[in-house]
Image (cartoon, rainbow, N blue to C red):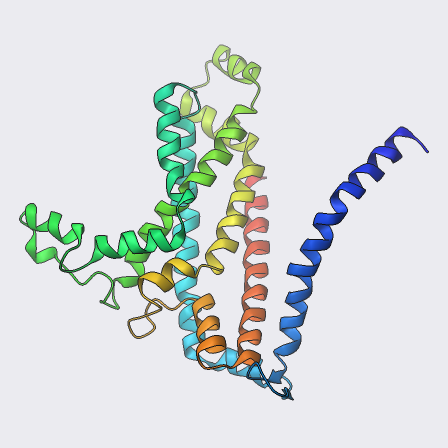
Length: 291
């Protein structure tokens, strides 16, 4: 056996436990959930086979499509909010001075907090009576701007985007800083000698060299946004009048509140399919734009 084959065998053995755990706890439940989507099942008792009825109901339910629309707003806020802000912060905080390390830590801190804690904090910020937001508007003489931030169906979804963006900037900033630090200093020296300006350097050198990292960040943004649940559940529980309902909360309510486990399984399968389509579409578009 050659040295390369021994190394590959050692790597395979090292990866085997994690692979088995992932298959058992992630891959198999996906297919198991898709299977139960063909049944009328309340979680206990016998499951009655009903074919594609659950999936047809998912497609015809307007609340499902309202949840999908709300999720698309979250996806857009994440991709066009978290990633650009994280990239700008990474470009500014690439150096490792004490002040910049403190800023990095402060930006990353929300990610360390539980999403439930973040939801409670922002619920108090938006509170119509004791919230700091309305208090600041009062202090600035803008009483007419005061609103029921989470109770108004017209704006509640947009107000939820702010804590979602704030909560998840940190991980992408760290990813981009690591990618920027992997760019060879010789490239910076060569661009400086050639008289390349900062804007041209950003779009012609820096972004192409970290493009793969940006693509990974977009995948994480889309997948994370489509399974968003805990922060929304704590702050609004999908209300008022389903105005902040997301796919995950829609699935949860149908599964555990009304005990339609078969229908909830069909919804979760639909979420997986939509996630794959969005991720594949985004990667295709980014590949074309890059070229």
